[in-house]
Image (cartoon, rainbow, N blue to C red; front, side, top):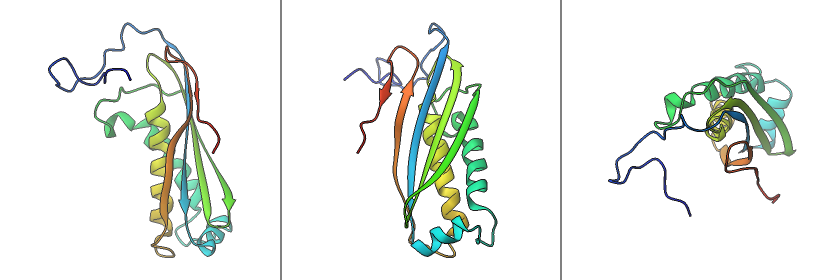
Length: 159
């Protein structure tokens, strides 16, 4: 395992200097799952939640969160993102799957932006639906794929 780069030799926190790195096209995909009652998922799917279209509000929240990642995670670099996309699927009658794809042309990756996007989108779903289902859970927030930079291409093995 490599040395943790966010600490100097004395153990003090630091922001990694990415200045010497080459700018490359970098992509990251992350996902999260929100588990809920089937009736809650039906409300979301049928746009029956009184607060509005849950998926579109969650999509906007995820995009906004990706753009603000450096404000939320202390040692993340602010990045000029070139694209943030969120998609939703229903793999079971009690599961909403959220996936974010984030891209940048830069010196550091966008894994944290993709993870932040799905996390905040999932929290938004919870917020909008909590009156119908307080027992919802947010699960399996994870990096699915990243590419670009010297560490190369990573793709999570299918489960």
